[in-house]
Image (cartoon, rainbow over all chains, first blue to last red; front, side, top):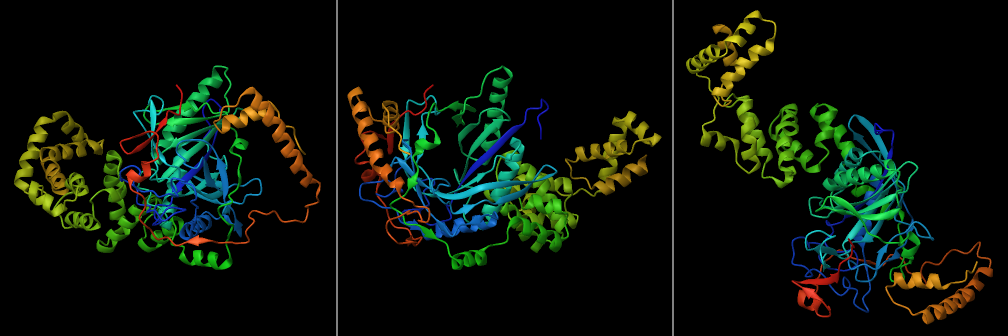
Length: 480
Length: 98
């Protein structure tokens, strides 16, 4: 998507995926279940880099890395090494991060790879430079915003969690594309079962942003998928204004300040060579043989693309529906569980993609964060089908169902049943006709069918959506 | 191959390591580091074309740990050596300047 002023932005992402489905951290046997715990209570001498401690690699972390590498169609390497990335920052106790490197003889666990996704109507493919393993730093907390806080508070519970960093080529062309790409990547990670991405900080990004012919800026500290689009839009606007004003973009690292919604310069003069990468002497090389690869291939679950094709075939719904549902594993699981107990696949997808998704978006929650169950949705669809409630009434039940209510109980509680009392509807229809003489005249001219539906809507309004729409139409037609 | 280390390079390295050096120390270390590099540059006289790089001096591979959790430290023990702490956190100077 080229901007209307001809300035083309180029975006590359470094996506950190926290392997919180592992039971333990990357180098030590501390539990990975640190979310929600008191600060500095989920750690050990290894996490704190106390003298004499040594890292020991979590075998399952390597298996997870191989799974992601294969799922992204990358080249899983036969031999891979860990490297030290040296930098001085309070989120790291050791003053270096154990990571992997693709220069100076380094070999990350997976090289290359690609991801096909849909951005709007366009089919896109973005390539990866690599997927590498590294440890998560600790978490810094501030008094308010990072720029205004007088001190930083450090919590090392997160320190040493296993991360996979997927680095893309600079091939993304807009914030919307970046979001669509991340959505697809998220769906793949969820299907692989290597990370619960509903947990805070489980998918974080750094973004490289530049305009053609100008210097590149790296924006760090984008804490979630939802923040990526905002951070990119701000940084694009900042660069654009600077370029248009005749200024020059400085190649630098900036920090996304979530509270103030701006990127701020970190004022570091450190360049890549200042990280002084060198092979990690405390960890031996990892050799990935055919046996490990075969095991990973065998363990490979159904991935979103395959699932979309299967759902289309199995339930005969449009590919568009299937791909929207498979954007989220939880949504796709919910769909299939509902279809199992309510045999109208299109009806189920219509409701999930329509009113249910709309409510989820309004509340900024994912379906798995609500108390809605497939059983409740199936019950609601049955109530519509047997004529107990109208679709309109059902729409009003969704909110309560997301809080865990069963639709049949809601109907009883609020006495929101379909009204099929012809005498009552007749009276209401007569009222509507008297109240809307102009519309009635238009209907009688018979030019615009929508004028008739307006009258139906008025009867609906008087019954708070409970009138049987078919019966109302019949009665109105007769009266006119 | 070998490059002389000048005082500016020493100053830069000192900044990366967050240590303060006097003028005298900078001069001294520049000389010392240069001679260390000089010494190592002898290695580059060897023909290593067909030698595989050594990543690790130990000939071990695949030293793994099973993914099983164990109890760690208490908050009190973890913070025991911290010069500054508050509400269970380590306290550090601010990072970003205005």
